[in-house]
Structures are given as structure tokens and as C-alpha cells.
Image (cartoon, rainbow, N blue to C red; front, side, top):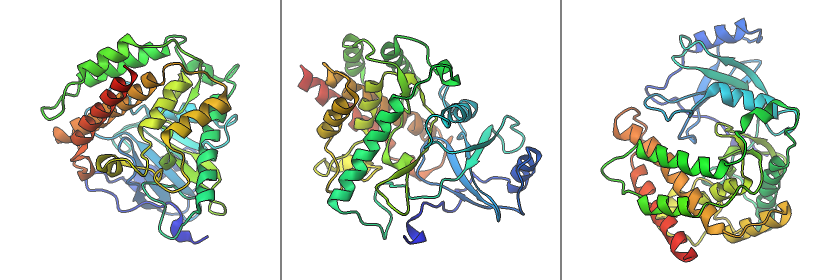
Length: 355
């Protein structure tokens, strides 16, 4: 397959530059053999942590660091992200290989970690130009995506560092309380209050159905596909929010990002993965397939779907709040307030259907 379809970074955004010499010196001090200075590019897909490629003559690396500006408590924890992936790699081989974690903020102005780049295709809003999948190939890819999620949820954490990720039972309530609290901290004049949605979620919380390793941001644009067979998944990226939790809560978050071909214009504008392609499962098919293959039971799907939409609204509003207060200048965030309002409307529609 042509090199043109492989994922690659672009120009570094103004104000988000890296000091390549300092980073190289730090890596070499950790025992990483490097030739010369790297070509530094930046990936535009992430709206949370900043992600860069460091392309040395003898090593291809990825650097992740938190954004500037106000951050939610517990968010953008580079040390946790590094530790989770280090512990998960032996039991879930799709995790990148970690190289090093830096706590010295004098190097680039924040903590960061470095990992090996997984060379492949990342399906973002659309498949890369030059890559076309048939309807049957797309369906196979969709099924593989869900099978990998189910495999993650079946990882046995007993006797591993991953056991320390969770806080025990009560995950559902902790999530509802936590996202409600985060929402209260990022108000802007142009985003409506979602008190009715919050009240309904608190009044309709089910018990945890299970405890599993969950990624918490499972989307196609966090997967790496094989260049030889783009229906095969060779890597899973962005483990910032991974934890031990209820797998149906994760499924609700998956559905919140899932835009179908027949969705309205705002949903299509928000789409960040190619779930509109012929052959992709519908949201209903995703839920049915997951439940059938995982063996889990669900009596109140509306709760998980509404939760996923509200949680996504909070994440988007946290990002927009930084933009609104000029803590970031990334123009991609300019209209996030519209998205937050839209997701609240979607959550209300799900709740009305449940009633």
C-alpha cells in the first residue's frame, strides 16, 4: 500500500513548539540511542493532549504532553497514562511500547512521555485519500473494532499493576457525580444548563454490571490499522482516561461518538471517525453485537446512551472553556459550544424516548 495513506503529522501549531535539542538530550540521558536531531511534526486529531512525532534517523518516536491552560483535576496525567500502558502492554499487545516518562518540567514546560510510533493507518473523519474499502471490508473492520474492545474488557487484571486502577464498586455513581462536578466548573454564557439531564441520570443509575479494563475513548481515530490489510487493527492509542470500570458505561461513550450516514448536519459536522461509510454498523447494531458477543445483559440502555452524550458534552465544554478564556488559540475549538448544546439536546431526546 502507498506510503501516502499512512498516518503522519503536520506543521507544529504556533505557540505549541517543542525544544528538540532539550528533548533529545533528555532521551539520551535515559539511555536511548539517537542519531542527530529529529524532524518534529504535530498531529491535529487530538483535542486534549498534544501529540508530536519525533522522527530521528534511527528511531521513530511519539511524544505526548498536556495542553496549556486550565485543566480538570485528574485530567492530562502523563504519569498515569504512561504507567497504564506499561502495565497493559504484556496482556494487550495493541498498546504502544513505552520509552520514557519525564517529570522535569524544565525540559519542555510540562511533564511528558515518549513511546515508539506504530506505523500504520489511522482512520480519522474520513479514510485517508487513496484508501478505499468495500462494503464487506468496512463491515469486517467494524466487527474487528468491537471485537478488540470486547477483548480489552476481558483482560484479567489479577496479580498485575492494573488492579490498582480501580476504586471498587460504585463506578456508575462515581462517574455521574464526577461529570456533574466537572460540568459545574466550566460554564460559559452561550451553553445551556443541563440540570434536567443531570437529575435524570442521578435518578436512573443502575448498579455496575461488571468491572473491566476500559479505554474510555474508544474510537476509530484512536486505532492504528495495518497498511497491508486495513481491516486489521495493530494498535490502540490515547489511554489517558483508561481505568477499571463498568464496560457498559464505555459502550455508552462509544455510541456518543458514533455518527451514522443518515444523521443530521451537526452530527456529521462533529464526526471524527468514518462510521458513515456503507458497511458500518448502526448504533443499534453496535449495541446488539457487543451484548451478544460479551454476554452482558442490559435492561436500561437509555441510561448508558444519555450518559455517553452528557459526558462527551462535558469534555467538549472543558475544551471550549479553555478557548473561550484564551488559554488556547486552536481555531478548531471555536464552535465547540454549539456541539455541547447539541449533545445536551441529543441526551434529552434519548431520555424522552425512555419515558
